[in-house]
Image 1 (cartoon, one colour):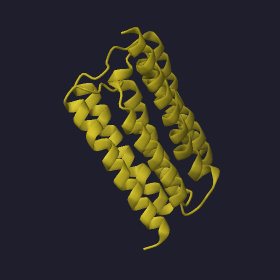
Image 2: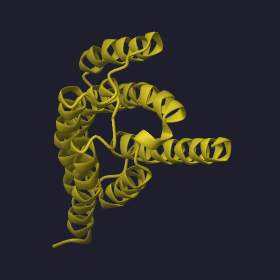
Image 3: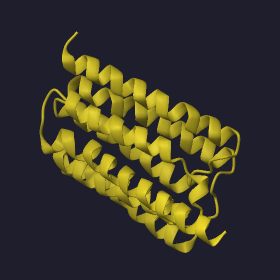
Image 4: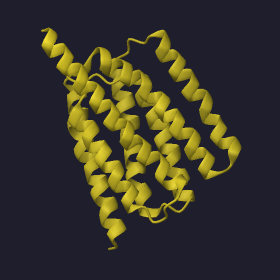
Length: 195
């Protein structure tokens, strides 16, 4: 096995390691994911996985593919387990903007533009979760987002070809996970001082 294959396998292991307690927390109603965010993330992550493969990402793309499948399952759980389904008007704006952007990647017929567009869509998908995390920081899991940030960093290192097409999505997701962690941590400190 090559170093890229080992890193990819490790990143896939981190994916399962991160998602298992997160899914268990959803099933126990401890964590309540925002359904819109997870629907957007599931669809964009799956499409980016195929774009990375087309651009030569090789085994480094596999952690993103595994994550896409599990993310779609979390979206299903968010809906069926009545996660955060309190949808505000701004959530609808983010959701419609994200979904309306998806067909643009098809029109470009270029993996780079697909990844750029889908990365922007994924960021739009994060906005409802950021809003919810600000309002209800105890309904999100800091360890989960730490693991996903680390996993995406390892997935970048495991890539067989380095280009904007292969690096942009996992690197951006890692950065935005760190931003979400900071929001959750900050809001928890503020709320604990109030109580």
